[in-house]
Image (cartoon, rainbow over all chains, first blue to last red; front, side, top):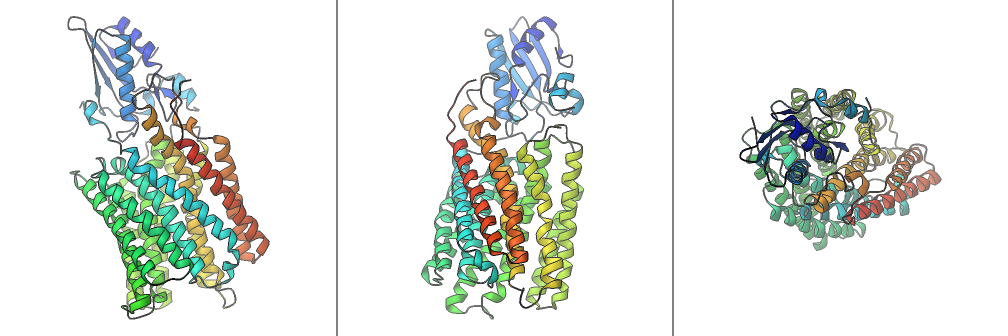
Length: 109
Length: 427
């Protein structure tokens, strides 16, 4: 499991990540969690609202729409009764240190 | 700073882009076929109908059409905005798609009359639509970046190239220029080669190569230097031509272009060295090869065309020079980048709204890797054999080399259509 995703609810976060491990960057072929694209998952139990904060490997990623769409769909599937809100950030910008050891191995390191 | 989903890079409609790719693939086959059927042209002056026809198929039908298609797709990436107008992009395609075959037919049969003139007008209107679209797209951004400037200037030089071409065509019939058209051929050709192709390839390559290698290397200062060196070299070349200065002055722009290309190669090598993605795919290998191939025409100019040319051999050096450009680095970068960009465009078209968490094919599954390797090997072998044929005047090497290039063009087209015909599937 990734230890880089910030959250206010570790149990729900792990449940979300199980689904997010199946969301891939189509160009790289690595899932968004091991790639370190997911920064934060916050769960509002009262309002049943999930706020996801994520990034892309580059701000000009032509597959960005597809990846964020897939993340939104995946979280909606995992939490069907919740309102899912995916936000994109480039501060901090994605970098090599965010990739998990499994991801680094996949990329040939 | 959180951007929300609205902060996403906007992609260009695939319907705008794909016709350019389809058109270019047929032009590549036609260009390679005509080269195969006319290999004896190597021993003739480059200003002859068949060489002009083949050169314009490769320069306009193949390289320009695919670069236009790719740049319409990449404008959002380069200018960090969106393509200003789909309509202008369609118009650009239609005018060029009609103008190019007319021009090539006119060259092939050397019909310098109405057909060639109409073709030149249509091509200029098409290029004008593209230029307006590029400028309008870049204008929407408050801080225009170096990559955007590369594409804007490249489009301006393309317009200048086709405008000079238009004058040259009318000069055949109406003698509107002080000298005959042959006198301006070198100016027309180099504005296109340096201003359009080189600037655009460097502007696009300097963003795409690090992006596909997942390299964090950036050096905008260096890219600005390259940008100014190339533009000053082109202006110097124009000055030398206009004021009819001595041939020795040509070393000045040649040196400038040599420095700019060397800096670009260094930029790509540094990006390659610090790449995060260690496993480099075949398409990126072809693209990296093409970066080094830019040196070939410069070397031909430096060591053969200007120093060693003798009267008996003078014909073959311009042919070698043109070949290393149009069948060399331009073709190599297109072969590599087509199968990095086209599968994305088709994938986005087919799967963007139906991605199911890793259960769909990824873009690289949309084309055949085997066909790609066949294409790559036949291309590299054909390129080397044909060059040997030109340098050592071996007819059989020219035939074998051009046959291999034709084979490579067929593999390319097959793979392009395999990608285009991809239907949604789950795995």
